[in-house]
Image (cartoon, rainbow, N blue to C red; front, side, top):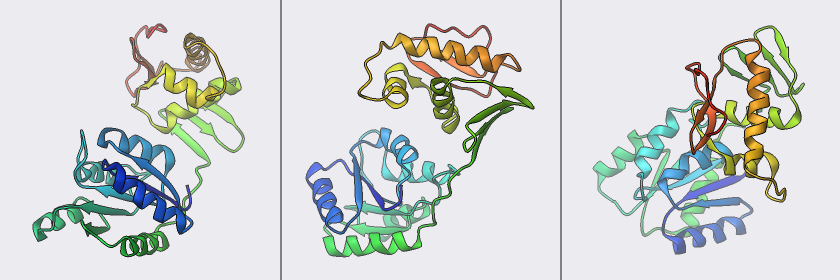
Length: 236
């Protein structure tokens, strides 16, 4: 999202202070307070700049930065590493992990805002994808069409949105609750089993022309897996 700054910081007071000052400068701001969900949030929201704390619960900022740089769709997002560590060796470690800039606590808020603006100017313009590809499945995002090899797959709007979400992050298992919230919307009240029905329809349509790549994880949810599934269950 253009002009979006994501703050990955577990100190609530500091995160709110940064959010206030960045919003005052006209930026959109989203805060994340845990390392283990940061990467998924970055992939979902595609910020223009990330302010990333070194020390986070579950996963460190350095680990997040390394993983971020390994993913083609988000690897070019500028990262400003925020840390209490001031030793030169630590700075080198952060920059080696892929950080673009490094700020040591305590720091000047105006200086950090200026660094965000500088990174924003250098950030590449986001490219809008026109299609998604997974194995032999191709989704045309402009025409809203899905193909399996040369075969056109007719999907309903809900099945299309489900497949799009899974193709955007292959390998990730989405819970029914997450799919309901992000495919149906927060103001639509339907049972979680509704997801199973639409996954079953999606699977039937796709599998008419090839192997089953929809993975079912019992009691968890659904996702796409590069390994074809054997007799995959619909009652995760």
